[in-house]
Length: 288
Image (cartoon, rainbow, N blue to C red; front, side, top):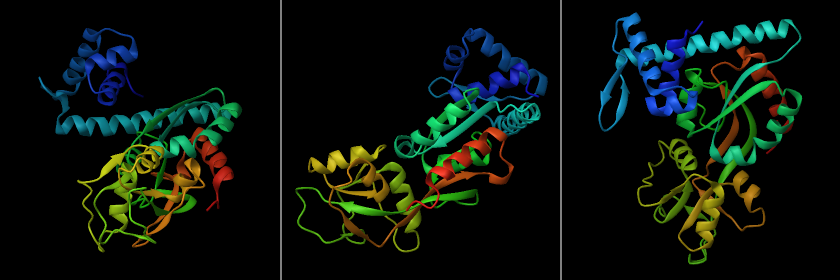
């Protein structure tokens, strides 16, 4: 099981520094520093480089210790959840990762159902890009990730079949399609959508989004397009969620997307994660 020093070490890696960790854990900064020193002494290794401008930076061995500690944390949670389940009780920690856009559109309903059924489960949520969510799921920083294709090598379950569509600025000339082979400037995209678009079209064309506007939310894409700042590329699922009546045009080349839930192993989830997956699939499975 994780000891006190390892728990504080993981908290520092998550929160980005000693001050942030002390505030998060409601302990003093010297207490956090001492825990890190104690762990470095016990392991006889240097876990962090200390840089005046960038703060604490994990050493190579510090990164290895972090990944092992995450595995230990995951196993410890599994242990307690197995004991809870033996006593006909579902409790513990559920860690969900999500694209910001899915936090707004896909997550609220199943999470509401889940929290009513299992109020004793502690739910934590972290948001990120598809690449960040894949990394977190692979290293057991989260139990489940709500994300979009490509899913990489992780285990996944498709919930919604989607595609990218174009929405035209009032300043744009009339177009019956948005051709990304030629019209790649003054585009507005969700950051996660740009990552997915680039990955999906790899081998056909490599798009340069440096001259475009990237946002974190789908509704921001819609508002910026409406104000004439450029044409938008957005998932149809997102567009239907925020502006179902808004006109759209096909994107060329066609970009199909699958929205789903992913994990390092969906068949080996903790009881609390398995229950959330069940509710999630009941709510969205086969929706397109």
